Amino acid sequence: MLPRDDLLVGCGQPQELAALIDLAEQALRTWEPVWSGFIPAELRELAQQRLGSLAEVRLLGVGGWPQAERQRLLLRRQELAAAEDTASSIDPPLTGLLVSGNFLFDPAEPADVRRGLLAAGLDPGELGDIWMRGDRGAQAVIAMDTAQHLVGLGAQVRSVTVQLEPVPLDQLQWPASRSPRNLTTVEASLRLDAVASAGLGLSRNRMNELIRAGAVRINWQVVTSPSRELHSGDRVRLEGRGELEVLEVQPTKRDRWRLQLRRS
Image (cartoon, rainbow, N blue to C red; front, side, top):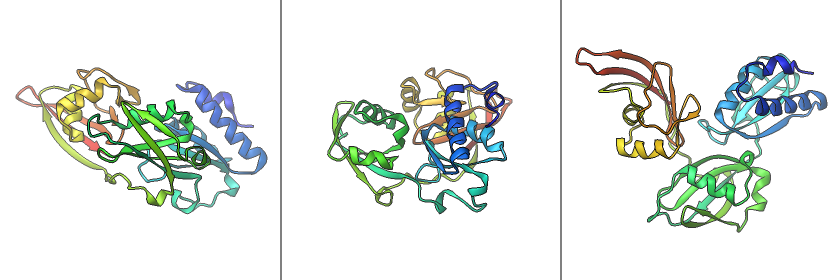
């Protein structure tokens, strides 16, 4: 048995981490690898920090593409895991999903698509990353065993009726890969909308809309106030646009702020 109490002490997501501990203990007990459902990035980081430090268990996260935010965890006995195992060297139980509809007159965001798919009956653990494909709809990564239930199924995303079509992963058009890069910007304030606009390459009006809609998180917590001030060490995440980390904040001689940022 794993040291459950020690693993959960001071944990911000005890129920979610406890469920992963259950899976790890199952993998240890049966000597069979176990897959979790899709989990958010903050829970994955927590599991890798706590379970990943144990000598008995090996964790590997896969989400269909290298920069996937929502991933499934493969939990195995350490003895069964090859040292060179990577996400590309295993065959994860994932497949793709086309979400087709005309969004020309009612543009949607990935969060809108996620709400529509959940309302259509998908479980959060069956649904990975989602990204838009212009006004034609969206694409997503889903659990393999979910695909057969979605053939011919319709769903509603905002005012648009969409059709769902499972497809192999290699038929998806993946989002553009983002190489981590550092950048410097000088801003009049440390407001979230100003800094995120500069760092993520969106207009300030658009960033305001996304923040108020609950699409932006700081240190994994949803923030809906564009005026929220940022500080060194803060991590700003926008689904489909990646993450912005505030590395350094310095005042200038003209009462402005010079920020060192890392976008990934």
